[in-house]
Length: 491
Image (tube, rainbow, N blue to C red; front, side):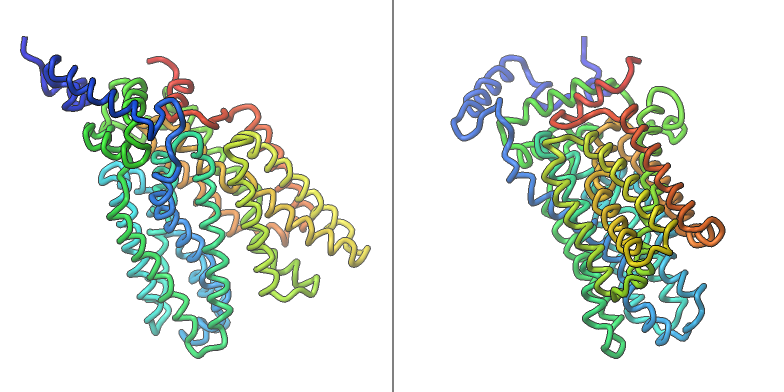
């Protein structure tokens, strides 16, 4: 009987598995000799040094994400003067926020792009609109071109972070995947701080704001160039039946002695699903609904906690405490960075669930302090310092868990079949909720007052903590295939 070389099983087999049994025995014997060499131990963990350069290149996209979020904060006044829309708050709001619209567009298509052309090419594609958009914004003489440039940059911002989360999760060894995942949040913080420092440095120069945009083109170009030399995700290669290439990339990332076990785990989790047959509707019902629901809810609660509203309102609170805006922004950035570094060190020790639960509880306490301070403003400077302290504590506890963990946890719990599209769907929820929180925050503050609004945010933090305790599974130290098999019900 002739084998059917068009079958799904054949597509999942490497050339080694299809060769003559006698030849295969010879090759396996040679492989065993190689694997038993004293340089590496099969039962030990792979070297983290092999995957580190690939992860560092991927986090450039997160740095760019943070940089472009903060790039217009300092020079916005100079931009409005040079482009002729001084005093037009609507135009100023569009310059700041239009990149969020672009980010939603980029995010919506990120899953299909990452699945269709691979992670490396998706990174390079995300860099292209960020380079073009930055150059347009830097050289423009009118508001319309500035908005176009910001929108293009936004599409790259929307595409980059989901792909970065996928890539870092898929190329990292299980024992250090949490630490590498923390790099994403740290890179975002560094991008925000970098934008602030560049803005302060060029603020007094004539047309100095243009330098802020020109500077951002350099790391985007660096990302596109360096990705050419990085490994492709072995999970994506396996999913597209490129088994030999997947083995080669596993060897680059984990070392030769861990290739066999890594491929074996991929085969174990392979349920014969059609890799190209995932429809968006499949994410909304059936056996994949639970993990997609967990991911979407985590991102929604992350934004409903009020983190972006706190960032937005922080300058007002610090101004009341007679702290200059530059110092206030630097303080917020450094606290955020400090919390992110601590989270990176703890993710693979305490685990994702513990940090996420503790983070939301701490955020609820911090919001409670701010609500209390807002209730008793007549008491003077004591409540003012309490409000500032509560804000810094909120940012710090957010950075410990609610900031970095969702982006790391979601690619871990999503099955290989739906990982790209599910990540795109959940990140889209993030952008939509982010947009509405930013849009309605000041209006709700005016209608409800700070005490009620902070109490609402604290309540969402407590709801998030309860949700994490009930629904989130611990993924620390487990391979992606082990997590997938444990979460998905049998067909």
